[in-house]
Length: 376
Image (spheres, rainbow, N blue to C red):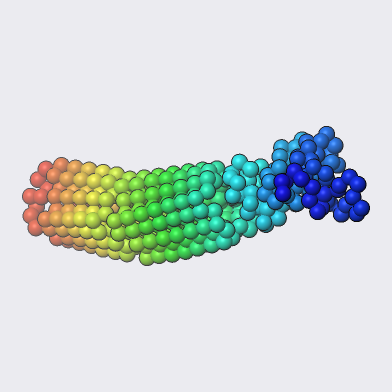
C-alpha cells in the first residue's frame, strides 16, 4: 500500500466509523506534510503527532518543524521524539540530528541515551553528541570528524577505524573502549578517561591529551607525534613502537616507564619527572628537558644531541655511551652519574655539577664549555 493511500487510522470521507484520536488525515503522508506547512500553529502541532504514524518517512517529514518560527512547535516536536525516534534520527546523519539536538539541549538540558546502538560506517561528521550515554555503541569506521562528544559516556564503545579527527571528547569516559587504528588527529582529549582502552595503531597527532588518564591503555604502535600529554597519567600504559616525536609533556610524572629505543626528537619534556625511567638508546635529539628530573634514570646509549638540559637533574643517572654533543646543559646536576663513554663534543656544561660522577677520561670534555663546573 502506498504511503499516500488511506490506512486504518485515516479519516475517510463516507466512512461509518469516527476517526480515532490523533488519526492521520485523508491523503496519508502527503496530507501530513501539507499540514506541517500550514500557517496554523494548531494544525502544525497536530500534524507532528500524526507524522509519527508513518514510520521513518513521517519522522523525517516532522523534522522540518525544527526550523519552525514558532517556539511552541519546535519544543513540542523535540519532546515528542523518544529513544526509538532518536536512534532513527542519528542514523539519518548529523544534519537532521543536530537540528533536533539543538532544541533538546535548549529545552531539556539534553542528556540522551544511545547506548548499544549500531552506528557503524555512518557519516556523523560534526554531530552534536555532547552529554550522551553511548556506552557499548558500535561506531566502527564511522566518520565523526569534528563531532562534539564531550562529557559523554563511551565506556567499552567500539570506535575501531573511526575518524575522530578534530573531535571534542574532553572529560569523556572511554575506559575499555576499542579505538584501534582510529584517527584522533588534533582531537580535544583533555581529561579523558582512557583506562584499559585499546589505542593500538591509532593516530593521535597533535592531540590535546592534557590531564588524560591513559593508565593501562594499549598505545602500541600509536602515532603521538606532536601530542600534548602534559599532566597525563601513563602508569602501566603499553607504548612499544609508539611515535612520540615532538610530544609535549610538561610538569608530568612518568616514573618507572619504559621508553627504550623510543623516538622523542624535539619533544618538550621540561619540568617533568623521569626518575627511575628507562630511556636506553632513545632518540632525544633537540628535545627540551629543562629542569626535568632524571634521578636514577637509565639513559645509556641515548642520543641527546643539541638537547636543552639546562637545570636538569641527572644525579645517579646512567648516561654511559650517551651522546650529548651540542647539548646545552647549563647548571645541570650530574652528581654520581655514570658518564663513562659519553660524548660531550661542543656541549655547554657551564655551571654544572660533576661531583663523584663516573668519568673514564676527562678528554671527553675537551671541546665542551665547562666554565664554572664543580668537580670532585
